[in-house]
Image (tube, rainbow, N blue to C red; front, side, top):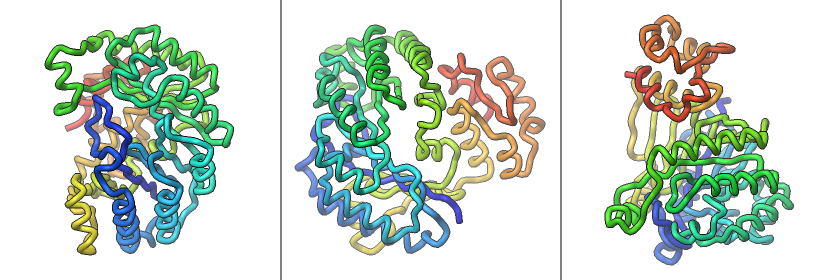
Length: 375
């Protein structure tokens, strides 16, 4: 039986950050119980089509801010999954805002089977947190991390690089907290100014100044080096972990393994099919109410599409592309058939243990290397 990951999208937040372009709604603008009702119905409908082919081994609840859910609402989601799918859960992650977790919620998470919590910290600088619209403070973030650890949950924290007013000292301060609290997983992303966000408007008006691209890249390199000193190895371009603490669910994405997404705007990959849920609440509800699968938008990947995706996703990881798996799946000899392309980037790549990977010091320019290898 094939393994399957489940992603649940919870599109609700207490407030909207200035850089966010995710499909989400501020609490009070949408009926959360109505959403959960449709979500659990979708789980049942999709499971009826695929459950005999899969064993669910990872669950990831993201958003939005999943910690806005009540224990009852989270329980309804988990009941729907366990009732409709065969499961052997190896990892169950939930994202959380540090300002809205407490003993009651963490106890509910443990009872629901959560093994891992991912905190959207972004920075431990209070001035920057306030400027970007985060609701928590640095002290609240530290307290939430310690509380989750006391409940025996694995903890991951997010950081963002290139924020307004951010300096190298902020990176050092972030890493110092990682070391102090024995945090064993960090995700670090370079800020991208998305169109139609509040941040984009502020940048256009000149009311906020961001570090330039070179400075942000320097921050990334510094973060990488300092986290390595703390024993967190980079296993994907934006993710670091103590050995054995890597995100099993996210590795599924980068290894092009099957997963199914539930909820508004969720995506799925099943074999050579990429599927997409509607990105509006009304359309999502309409499909569910008509007993139709919400996974209405579909693109079937051609053989070349699948090869390109495998290369692009795998080379995001430190381990890189599994050459033997690639050859078996596509009935070819990768090193021979891609010889001309590989020669163009020979200085930036390496082959070891039957894996092709980008040399560590060139991960920051990963995209320009990958583009030479794909159609």
